[in-house]
Length: 525
Image (cartoon, rainbow, N blue to C red; front, side):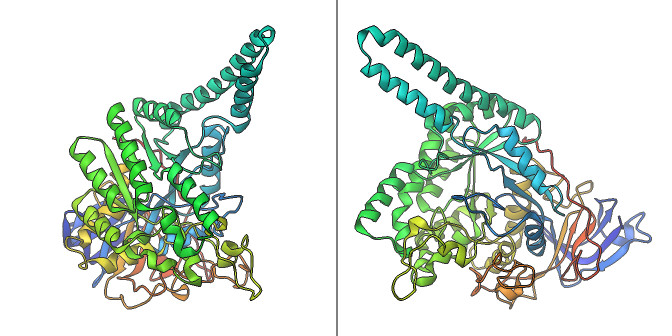
C-alpha cells in the first residue's frame, strides 16, 4: 500500500472549504495542512490536486443490486456497480438483504454479504424485515379460525385446539424474527428496512408486527427505516385505475399521490413518538412528508430522513409520452412544488442525506411483461412494469451541478449529505465520511471546472446494451442524459488504494485492480 500525498487541493468538509494538503499513510489519513510541516512523507507518491476539490470518499447507503423484484433482477452485479460507484466518487456502499417471507434474517444477511464480499468498495448491508409470518402459516391460522366458526358443538373443542396450534406456529415465527434483531445489531447490522406497502407480494409488515420490531430494535440499539407508502391508498387507486383503464405512464403519480406517502410517514412518526424509538425514512418525495418530519423533529422525535437525486432533479412531467416508462419508480416523481419543498428541507436539515436508490433495468426488461398493439408499440400499463432508475454514478455530478442554484446549497452541504451524514447515521463515523487524522484514507478528488459534459451513456460506465460481453444485460438509455454534471471525478481512493486514477478505472487495460473491500461492522451512537 503506497503512501500518498495530495497537494494543492481545496479540501471540502461541512465546516468549510480550504486549501490543505492531505497525507495518506497505511490506509489512513495521517496529516492535513501544509505538507512542509508533515513528518514521514518522504517517498510518498505526490498527487497534484491543483484546481481540484478534495472530498471525503462518498457513501452510498441506499441502492439495489441484483434485487429480486417480481422475480426479475436488475442488470448489475457488485463488480459493475462498484465501478460505476467509484466514478461517482463513492468508496463505501450499502445494500439490503433480500429477505423473503418466513426466511431467517441472519440467512438473508449472510447471503447478501457473501455476494458483496469480492467487490473493491467497502460495504455493509441493511437487514430487510418483511412480513414476519409466512403465507402458509397465516393461511393455516385463518382456515382453522373459519373451521372453528363453522364447527358443530361436538367438534368445537377439537377445532379450538387446531386454532391454538396454528396460532402457536404464527407466534413462534414472529418471536423467532424478533429474537434475531438483537443478534443482527450485535453482529454490526444495526439498521433495518420495513415496507408499509406491497401487501400482495407478502412484503408489507403488519402494523402490530411493525410496533414489535420498532421496540426490539430500539431496545438493542438499532434503527428501523421505512418505505413509507400507504398500502390502502395504493391498492384502492390501482384497482380503480385498472377499472377505468387509466394506466398510462403519466397516470402513475396520481395512483400513488402525495397523500399516500404523507399518511404513512405521519403514522410511523406517531408510532415512533409513542415508543420513543429512533426511525429513518427512505426516499422522501413530498412536501407533506417534509413538513411532517420537520414538525416531529420539533417535538423531539428521533427521526432522520433522506431524499434521492431523482426527486431533486426530475419531475413527474418525465412520465409523459412513450419514454415515461423509463422514469417509473416508487414513490413516483412529483410536481415542482414538491421538489421545491425537498430542497428547502435539505438545506434546513429536515432531510439529512441524498441517496441514489439505484436500481437499473434495461428498457426491454421494463417492457417484457407488456402487451403490444397492432402497431407493435407497447400498451401502457404501469401495473406490469418493474420500477427503478440508475443513479449510483450520477448522484455526485448532479448534486455538484445544483450548488449555488438553491439558496444554502453549497459544497459544504454536498459533503454533509453525501459523506459525513451517511457515516454518522449508519454507524461508521469517523472511520468513514470525513478527512480526519485516523480516518480511513477514503478520498475523492473532483475537477469542478470540468462541468460541461452531459450524463449520457457514453460518459458513464454502466454496462451498455449490445457491448461485447454485455449483450442484453446493459442499459440502452440514460435517465439523466439531458443533465450536465457539476464536475468530473479525477481520482477515487479507497483506504489508500486508487480505484479511479486520472479518470481511469484500476483493474482494466493491464492495470492491477485494488484489493477487495472490507465489510464494515457498524454501531449506532
